[in-house]
Length: 208
Image (cartoon, rainbow, N blue to C red):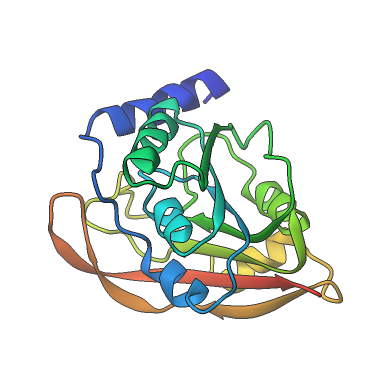
């Protein structure tokens, strides 16, 4: 799928549903970040913006990135409406071809899955290198298929956090894996339905 087709695909995904008025942050983000001193955060694949808004509300300065112009435009409007326009910068990026500039204390990539061309290992390696000393990279992937997922392929294989870490290939003397596990939770889908899902959680910290 070409870059243009990828942008069109994700624009269609977001345009097909109403703009979220109060998107929820991801559970793995709030449990990981609560208690950390706020700094500069990069949200890769920001989507509806629940993570970016929550981080901004906790005092973080957030750069929120998505391939979808619909998503980033909606988030910019939503951030202003929540009084967080000065803490949330929205930027459209196709991570297959470019990566945001800057240095960050936190980079989060929640469910950065796509049917389009994307070298995730390269993206996540760039994210790790964008961390300031002591900064953290939080990668949360699907470990199971939710009933509302766009991908219902029964043959889908979900790499473990350890496999994802190995694929990124970071030098252990500079980056430390602080967490790599597969917890379960009850999730609520866009239509209000609930189901038990598995998350693959990887937390990497750059040496101070």
